[in-house]
Length: 628
Image (cartoon, rainbow, N blue to C red; front, side, top):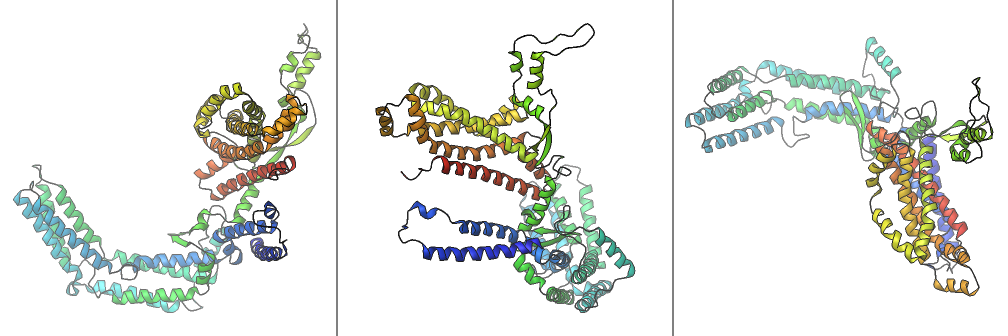
């Protein structure tokens, strides 16, 4: 219901936004010429259109719209797929799926193999003449054996009766299938079906893509027909056209083969006789019949196929319109989604699973994606303040008395504060996989900005700094971050320190380049003007050079954010027990497509959050950008 409402809402939003945009174009000022940056401002209605198009595509190609408006369609298509699968093996016998009868194709292929084998034996200079004569004689007897399978005069009445019986069963099924009264289940069958339906999960539920037991009357009809067709198919392929004449010739050929192989004690060629034996076995197991024996059987299959397609009714239209680029397929007793519905999870399932992952009672690997935990202020203070603050306090730490007690003094009390060993109230602190990844990116990026921007400005203003630091920076900057990951993780371990340091390395080089470019790109006339007004070096740096460098620095931050996210996920892939990359890596191993898409969505949203924040900072701090 929610997906259906959302679909209609998105369609109306798109139509409304397009109409509003067209009206806005007609009322736009005539002096807003092409190339004016002001024309690119606003346009929220086009943001709505773009976002709606993305969501609508996701809903459509994930088959979530089909699930919303026709919740039983996948189950019914599953039953249809069972019938198609049952018919497919029988249809392959005739020129329905293939271009010619299967018997014809087998005979043509094996006759060709026999002729090729005869030619190879004749041209083999290593074979003795006696061996050639024996092998070629066996092959020719094999070729003469094939007509015993294709001749009507050798066809047994028992084989004819089985074919006629199977044909009659298909005709009965074809006559009963369109009736509203079909199928008629026994009390036992109905009870078994009801018990199975009670345990059956819904479409898209975790652990089952498409429910396999029929949930509607139409689905039940196809399900029962598929069971009958499977029985017919099994009985047909168990049947062999092994008449007495064929068996006599086959026994003679295998006797010749055995006799020849028993005499192979002098190092003679063994491969040829093995190939001949395989060839004879292929003919033995093939379903070869006289050309007209299966005509009525073929007509019945074609006729029933047409009837079952007609009985699908509106389901065919639903399949064509709401299941794009794929279909529901059956494989044995299971049904699955073949197409984008398989690897593109439905939004309804994805957000349901995401909601479960956010709960601390569920989470992912016992850790919620994003939640909070109550933490004492003392723990926060102990994490922030360094222990050496207590060490520089005057005096000595207390010593225990003879009675075994220790009296605290000022120095020990300071140590208790900086190590968090004191009682304090608790406050909620974010926790979970998303928070861990966010914090790692934030810390690595912040350290890169704090250390990279001053060094970049220094290199842009000082000949010594540029010459000294430039080789060092350019030596490691071109190296892909993932190349550093194994070394950094080996040195710092798999905890947060190694990941934060790796992100620092990524952002540090980007911020140096950005700040250096901004400082070296400052207009000389502005610096001369500041000098002429009596500005000091610090004032010139603060009021002229730094403001002129801000556009480059902030652009560098936007680039660094994207690089940090990509690097972090890869680092969490390699080594990690928490974080978005860790979740995606584990989900990949267990083929949890919904969880993988959740991690991709979360990474995109967090990256967008960073980027929007930086864009707001750019608007507030450098409003003159692009207006010079």
